[in-house]
Length: 377
Image (cartoon, rainbow, N blue to C red; front, side, top):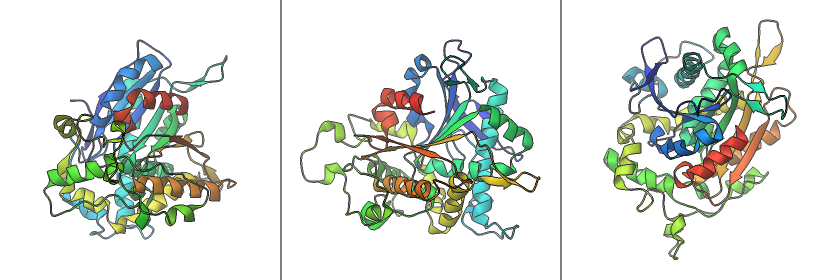
């Protein structure tokens, strides 16, 4: 079982690796970070399409998921704000999320060094970037990656130098409203898990809610249009016959109960996930998004504020038939991009919509998703 050490306390993260594609020396590595309840096995259908597109896929499990180190009670207490912050500038939640971001950064550093992947270089003929590593985070998993970029100025100098040579892009794939720190308005509220149910039942409830298809959503430049969006219901609940391709991803024949079980981790519903969904974490998440996208500068010691990891490109890849919380998150990120479009401290963000797709393109249409990523990362 491959794992990587990610902190001084001995925590490890489990990963699966598709391997070097056919002896290539200029392949692109994509580290795939999962979302809530569904762990990285949800990406396995993409692996058969990777090598022929010169991609190396690394499926990463975050803390608390199979193969990776569980959270300690103290770490969950910190997420919940039940500890006294050491810094006047940081809340316990800030500190907890920063620690998760550092773990992602340490995994990337470790993988780059251990696997000796090719660095970024420009093809002299086409100008295309070859080699390097991109990070893709799905849904709630974006929270950990936002935390990494938000605190990138605090990374060791060696790690920052390594990332400047290897890190290509950050792909925010169908991010959740939790990860951006802004709750969805009533019309776009989808997730409603009954905490009195067993962990297994909560996982099934959650899976059906996030794995359904919803009426196509348009993200406009006016966030108020999204804020006042009328209620959006899953297509199977419309009372009308639906095309079989729009049946929920997590139901047969698309996904068997055995497959569902193989890629979900119900124990996360015991405490950790409900802490992650709590309102008390919103400010910390929102702050990380701001410092990732809107003000990514830091004093480098010269008295001047400069962008940290300035060459890393930012992409939002979202699905128009996704759940409301993800649609709202994209609207929030687009508003940030518009508001800071001309700011010298902000990063440029590109938005890519997948039409006719729900929150599980990696499972429903893995070849399509891999092809999209080839053009994005």
